[in-house]
Image 1 (cartoon, each protein chain N blue to C red):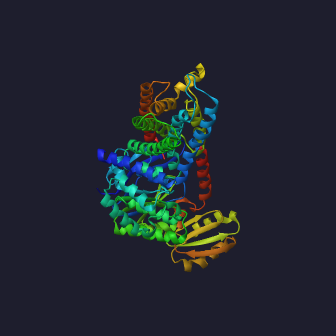
Image 2: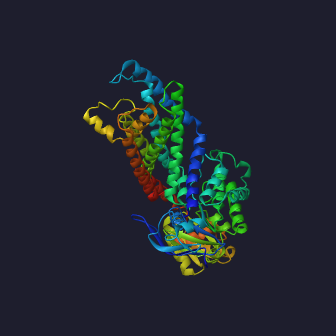
Image 3: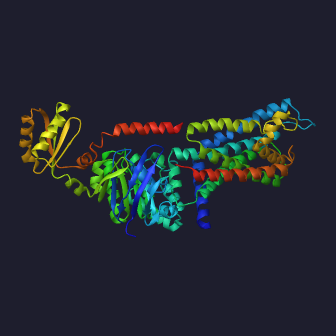
Amino acid sequence: MTLDRAAQTVYTMWLREMIRFSRSKSRIIGALATPLFFLVILGTGFSSAFQVRGGGTFDKGYLAPGLIGMSVLFASLMGGVSIIWDREFGFLKEILIAPVSRFFVSLGKAIGGVTTAMIQGILIMIIAWLIGIHYVSFWGVLAGIAVMFISGIGFIGLGIAIASKIESHEGFQMVMSFLTMPLVLLSGAFFPISNLPAWLKILVYLNPLTYGVEALRYCLLGNSTIPVWQSIIVLVIFSIAMITLGGKLFGKMRA
Amino acid sequence: MLYAIETSGITKRFDETTAVNKISISVKPGELFGLLGPNGAGKTTLISMLSTMIEPSGGSALVWGYNVMKDADAVRQNIGVVFQDTTLDDRLTGRENLDLHGRLYGLDGITRKKRIKEVLSLVELTERADAIVKTYSGGMMRRLEIARGLMHHPHVLFLDEPTLGLDPQTRMHIWDYIKKLNKEEGVTILLTTHYMEEADKLCDRIAIIDNGQIVALDTPQDLKNSLGGDVITLGLGNPGDVDKLCNSYRKDGCANIITQNQNEVFITVNNGERQIPHILLLASQAGIPIISVSLRKPTLDDVFIHYTGRAIRDKEVSVMEEVGYKMRSRRK
């Protein structure tokens, strides 16, 4: 397959995700509402009750990167797992029978999904800024968007891998609740990870989302518990590993 | 290239069953070829192998000169497939579905626009092209799928039960489209069906397939002629008499072919109208009460009964149950 054809395949799959995304306005609103409730209600409640060790306040600002990370996680996992719907509604056959490389099909699907995840992440970032959260610099914001992209690709790869293995959409519900909630709760999105007991610390440090949230926190707020270069390295390795795995499993998938 | 599709001994085994058992067929370019058989006969499995969806367990197949296993991409570029179940994206418009398909098959922008216009008018969907597919009726969706299968000018088109679940009027419409695109676009078509009428009306040649094997292959007319005359159907009140009655006709030698099912006897004779009195006389001599008699020109149904020993409908219920069971167990 020529490079031109590969690019066309990726673009086609991306285009499809974009058209579908633009038609599902209620889904977008729903996806934005959850993190915003957390941000406003939880943020206000926390800041009235706690103080972070060392004097800094624990408030909406502290929560924002975590909530951006959470919505990127939801959107990109969903984007990958949507292959299950494609199979359920038959469209998957149309893709599998086309004379194109499956790898580029899944790559296109991934880039499409990550685009929607980034749009949602950026929207939350903007809304958070509008309600008064202060970001350190413009370049930090751009770096934050790059972090969304890298971690989004990783979770989409994971989603595609899961979708290629799951036989039905009943399994999908189970995966979503057994995967997303622990990932979010164990990520430091809602609490500082500097003084955790050992058992919790292990789980938190094994969680790829932790590094996404920490990297975002550094980019947007200028401080993080895990050094930012470490977070970036972990995220890049995670993403490459997951997209390779997803692409491989999708290649073997049967309609 | 002599044949558009050529299989030799192609076989597909699943865990315990052999869905397709050493089938060899040759389809000429431009031919409209039908695979006729009950559900579960192996038609869909055969199409899935020819369209590179699943790999054969044995034998080989060439589609438009390319090997389905070694040259899958070349095969895919040259075929269009319309599956039994819909494979459209129902959140997109008809036009968008066609456009995405064109892109996946490497058509440039100008070609896509031109081709979309052509295929839409072929299936008469131009006016509804910009509506979301979700709002389409079953017949419209099937037409859109046929249009999409034609987008990239395939040489061979596979249609798996193209009119399944459609009302009679829509079915006739689809038949017209299929004939039209076979004639006007010169596409070689392989279709599967379990509707006798469909196979009879549409196909140049028919392969009757049962339990994964071809039991007869010819033009619809020659298949019917092979039965040797008109079919007289005798309904018997007592199923126990069936064998006895058949024997007395065999002894007499008046019939070309005698077949039976639970409580009916089918006799194929020349000049059926003139034979009825003789046939009934033999029955009353044997002391067997006949409760109904009918005479008709042979149909593909009779051909099917002749070659498989049962009507195509007989098997349907049990097979549907089996399929349902398989679907459920696969979900686990």
